[in-house]
Image 1 (cartoon, rainbow, N blue to C red):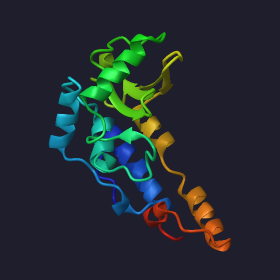
Image 2 (tube, rainbow, N blue to C red; image 1 turned 180 degrees about the vertical axis):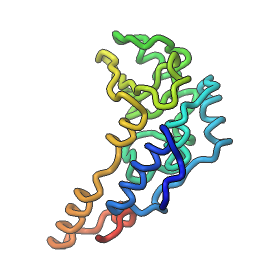
Image 3 (cartoon, one colour; image 1 turned 60 degrees about the horizontal axis):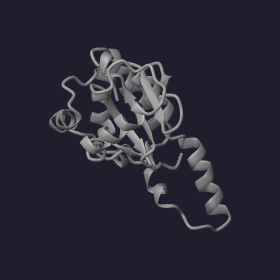
Length: 183
């Protein structure tokens, strides 16, 4: 696939294409429409969605497949309630987030850990991503959305190795096996 996008969107698309090249089945993820993305942002009281976030959601925001296994992510999983819980978590830990009410929550893990973008930098195309967990100081964990997306990518070669081992020892094939291509 030729990458026709540039800037932050192009970086996100290139990361996804790299994971597909490594063996992720393209059809194992479902993207979100711009209308769904706008509704996702509005639920959180956010007007602007950074270009890199919009591209991530266009690619995997409807159903992320292996990308965020075990974590709430996407336009159907993150809502006003998630934002409220994330805000309460931020309010109870040390942090340097400048605009908590305006932040955009990207993911939630078991109701105690969140990844988000400071509302003060939503005008950037590829802003930093914060990691916030109950009882721990909030930290800017990734320099950009594209870095966060790359770090969150499933390790397809490792999963394939695990799958091969399961087959060799006669273990049941896990359901996620349908999401990867045999090399």
